[in-house]
Image 1 (tube, rainbow, N blue to C red):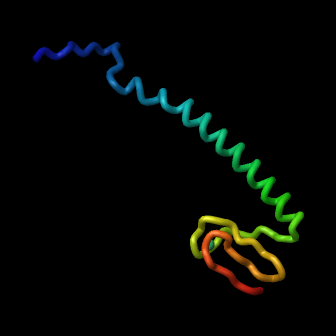
Image 2: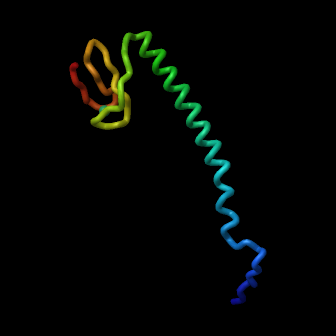
Image 3: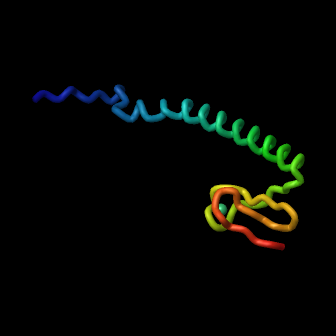
Length: 83
Ligand SMILES: [Zn+2]
């Protein structure tokens, strides 16, 4: 087995790692955009159905709580409480 000579100006294998960044940055921006769209749509739907959107569900943390008639409910799990 012959090893290739290492030249100080060749940079080594670390060169390829930063190249992944622009791609994940673009993906992050798309996700952020989508999140804003979903949030605004959710607020619009909530307003039209006299529901208010509260903080994240303390039980499953996978949805925001929906409040209607003083009752907060999680649409994802069965968590609910009355004010
Ligand atoms: Zn929940």
